Image (tube, rainbow, N blue to C red; front, side):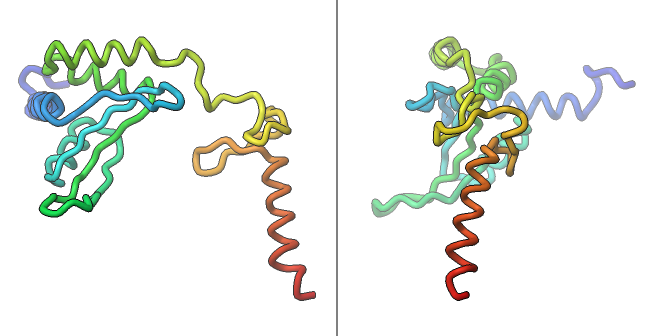
Length: 166
């Protein structure tokens, strides 16, 4: 195994994180979702390749864009986001060394204020009619859904689309 101090891949990754920390200090922000209080990390700018390079340096998150502004003479924006307590905490850990004191204080403030319970770990479904037990819970595209509500939806869809003409 190679020594991390000499390994060019390791030093390259460290340089990328240092670059990412500087970019985030200037263009990034720690915010929270107002409805749930869940922390989010965001980086927005007009330079697509810098946003994608940041995303590659961090190793996770989502790049979206371009977002067009209705005002004239505005460049389209590209945005990198990562949401949730764990991802926000990971970003803070990776970029801590390069963040200024004001941004560090803001990040710590948001992480301390994050809710202790996860809002998506509900005990009842969204309609409020069924318990979210293991037998009544299905996962579809990473989302937990109520089997009973899904059966009702499928039955209504079938009646409306396939039984009408017969």
